[in-house]
Amino acid sequence: MTDFSRSIIVTGGAGFIGSHLVRRLVKNYPGYRIINVDKLTYAGNLENLKDIESAPNYLFERLDICDHEKIAELMRRYSVTGIIHLAAESHVDRSIKDPFTFARTNVMGTLSLLQAARTVWEASPQGYAGKLFYHISTDEVYGSLGFDDTLFTEKTPYSPHSPYSASKASSDHFVRAFHDTYGMPVIVTNCSNNYGPYQFPEKLIPLFINNIRHNRPLPVYGEGLNVRDWLFVEDHAQAIDLIFHRGTPGETYNIGGFNEKRNIDLIRALIKVTDRLLGREEGASEKLITYVTDRKGHDLRYAIDARKLNRELGWKPSLEFEEGLERTVKWYLENQEWMDRITSGEYERYYDDMYANR
Ligand code: NAD
Ligand code: DAU
Image (cartoon, rainbow, N blue to C red):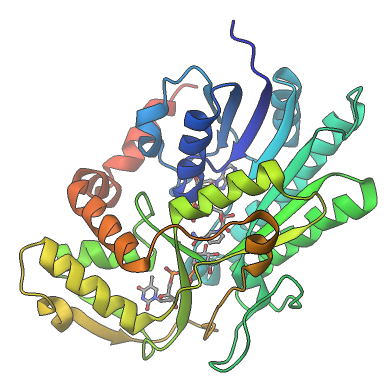
């Protein structure tokens, strides 16, 4: 059996950002055992990790993060010294319809994971030495900015508005409470909107690419004037890798793209690229834009100040937005089977069959 220098759990590794992070860690750290813990909700998709699933340093465990006992057992079995926690319910619109699920997974799930880590690490001979609980959070916990306000810094007070951001804010507080109360080494990072391959097509960019392809309406909430700060997902994964290895326990780091866009401007740019790659006249699909009722409590603007991360660890995004958008649209158009399976219902049946009788 191969000896690994350390074992790390990544929760939510079958999701959008998690799959990019797992792929990166599996490839870049052959000496680590990377354990992907995922419940495989509607948003988890093992197809996202097909290219690395048989790597000798990769393990998948289908587990609910709320199952404290099983997580603790897994941590003991592999002497886990690091947890990078991404598992969550992540879609704001779903949280408006079903806030309980968000409280269960994002708040209770995070607390269960913290408790499991505490139980196992406090009982180990080295205690918390060499251990790290790294929690992945969002810029949405800071609330909403006006057009003329300055950016969110790590010191901006929390002011969540949606059930999603309230649940993430609560989980962040629990993580910091475990640091302050029990001395657990923790890091929290708050990132802006990610985009790129493997994102579930309920989120703006993949939803719109798929709708353009099928000539379906593009539902723009309100007037399309809300502003988001967009970061290519591989740049987020690179930042997480850097912070996991070189960040200071107890600290918070903001991660962002320095790339604010009004929704309507982003949508027009997306239409142009998608039309061109589909061989249509650029802008032809603008006729699909359909203004619809606004999201309830829709935050006007998010914008991250990521200068601390740049100053302390030298990180900055590697891709220009235009290049990232081009790569993203190309990927979805070249991977239409991935998209079609998810949107056809075949995807749910695949998991039902795969995990029946387990
Ligand atoms: P996602 O919805 O694509 O994936 C979430 C993953 O978590 C899925 O694989 C799902 O199966 C798994 N999961 C859900 N509940 C679980 C449970 N109870 N037990 C185990 N696994 C469970 O999410 P994402 O967009 O990749 O986001 C990942 C993390 O990053 C989240 O914590 C989110 O809040 C945060 N974040 C996301 C963005 C973004 O733009 N997507 C930006 C900043 C922060
Ligand atoms: O800021 C980080 C957050 O970014 C993450 O924490 C969340 O997990 C992630 O989902 C994302 O949240 P948003 O709500 O900003 O992303 P979404 O893709 O749902 O929407 C982006 C913007 O586009 C938002 O202002 C709402 C708008 N929108 C969205 C959809 C799905 C539309 O106008 N029409 C749509 O159909």
